[in-house]
Length: 142
Image (cartoon, rainbow, N blue to C red):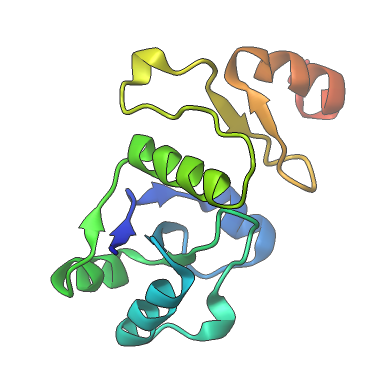
């Protein structure tokens, strides 16, 4: 059983849209929810900050909390490892997996979140420009 922190990312657009104070954060993940909650408590995170998104359950943590998590024994995880972890969680609840692999060249399709959509749907990166043109034409420069 282990606890992980992924890479710090810039979420300025999301933070501004939601009126959040912090603009850069990462995710605290674990093999089990119980282990995640126990570790989060050690970091001083409130249980109400837990994000129970289907298989993507996690806590958001700021750079300072990430550093503390690493000092307390969390392991660094890149996005490929996180994809593998999500695949494991899918398999654990009997859902189809996507065969996440650590080799980025083997990835079938890269998807990005469309922050203009209310539910932030994942859109294939190759189709993002088309998605913006079709669903958010008001954002395009004339």
